[in-house]
Amino acid sequence: MNTDDLEAAAYRAERRVLEIQAKLHRWAREDPHRGFDDLFNLVADPAFLLTAWMRVRGNKGARTPGVDGRTVFYVENVRGVEDFLDELRSQVKDRSFRPIPVRERMIPKANGKLRRLGIASVADRTVQASLKLVLEPIFEADFHPCSYGFRPMRRAHDAIAETRLLTSKSYEWIVEGDITACFDEIDHTALMGRVRARIADKRVLALVKAFLKAGILSEDGQLRAVNPLEAWRAV
Image (cartoon, rainbow, N blue to C red; front, top):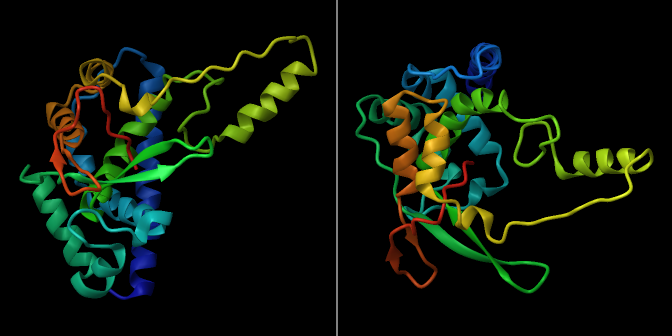
């Protein structure tokens, strides 16, 4: 598949994904207690996987390899995108897909401390992105308008703008809080419990859990299991 064909296919795929996402979001909003029990096939749907691939391909970390050493460049110029996605789809559908450990990088923070960054393989990132495309519109329906963190079309600057607006009126106090190492300390049991409140498809739950338990390859080359208080952050 050449670049023009890929771009055209990606455009059609994204339109299909957006249509399905709109339905999922509407159903979730109309029934706050609805449990979605038939989502797994969407994760392996060619349109979702292609859209997920395009998201991974356009990400800043596209040139960064996971523990398998493969990058987006490798997939595009050596493996072939079509073959890569076909194999990935087959593995997800027959449930033979297994995430591999993420590669750990310690990134300096402005305060002099280090932030742990987990770099998943390109294949794992693509499946994670497809999973996110399926789950995000459902959980978006449950968020309050005042929530901005890690949500589509929202960013920290939007929260700052709203804060400025409110303080220009009747509000006199602003309380700022921060959870130390939030994504490192989310309890897996509690997290999966919240996911199960909306997702009843056991195959999807098993896939989420597999990513949570994939393990970490540290910078010193040591492979360790994920601590029960460390959580997977979706791409």
